[in-house]
Length: 110
Length: 114
Image 1 (cartoon, one colour):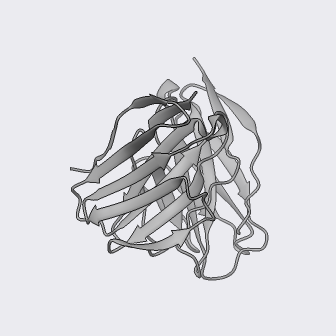
Image 2: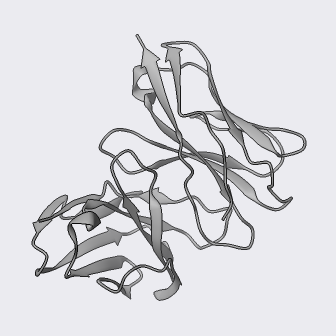
Image 3: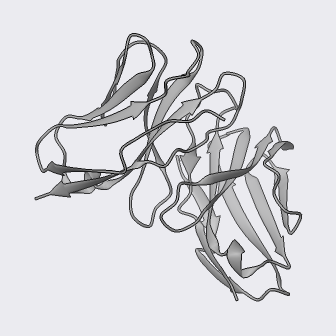
């Protein structure tokens, strides 16, 4: 299965940008990168996904490295409600599976 | 309606009991998933249904029996579970199975096996 590597935890101040890194060094050219987050006592929630170029939506931005071996989820202004576990997921072209990695626990300080 | 509804929210059962978890969505999604999540761990894929047919079984023990009676409903039948099966069971759905599709998750059923 496709394996991603993320830091276990990160901290941020409220109202500041947050950059959450993810490594997926053996990804192939047709595999998508997905990000989900899980708030306490809730199921995971879709954040964003992309293939090659950078992607933006109302929640976040996704910056994918040119060689596609890493990506960064960008929260432009962290709020207390953004405190969650963020999962970077490499979804293989050949598989229908969404396999979660270990995730990054984001702490947002007021 | 972008909601996946799971019932019950909490379930306590003995090792000899038979119980079922239910999941429902009305988004017209044709792929549905069961995940298991232990405390402070990421969700682990158990089963995937596509167009009401089981397409992926991640070598899950037979004491877990999934069922997809129609495109809106997904059940997980539980029988003779072990205490180590205590976990949060998450249901999810997507329009289709493709890797470009996003999953919508329910809030889960917290299961305790005594």
